[in-house]
Length: 221
Figure: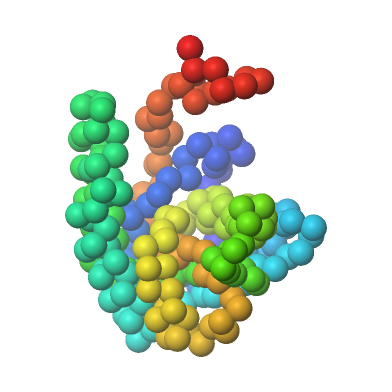
């Protein structure tokens, strides 16, 4: 396996949400996935709980069943107020970018079953438990998100593309039934994993830091 010759800063700034450039034909060896997950296990977790689980799905029948539910959720999302084309509507210069984001998301929804590997990170405990305080929810998510991001960075270094998605959670129980997940285990995302078509990913256009930075209080002027 050949690793990309990237600095830490390059990995951090060029790990993109990859959808259209996922290579749907090239297989991904489980050994590479395991290597990325070994790195993910080095991430911090609240109270060193390490309550994470990583469900790797390669079975074609199960991928197809999950993809069908994902597509159903996407079709509703694409016409909702949360769709990419409904974001940044106060900035006409963003219209083209948001349309490309929607097109990319549509491509993934149409082809999810063909992605070689689906990674579903899970956590022990339910952040959606009735009456769960914000601190508990933040603690649960904060104990799995760093590990998943570490996985995605490790994948980038190995020429793999990934994308953080959550639409399947609209049908979380149905997906749990497909995969035999216990009720007390919560899915937090679905990460498609595949080699990329080309590896020349660039930094993304972002709004200036000045618009989101607050020092010692919520000053906005």
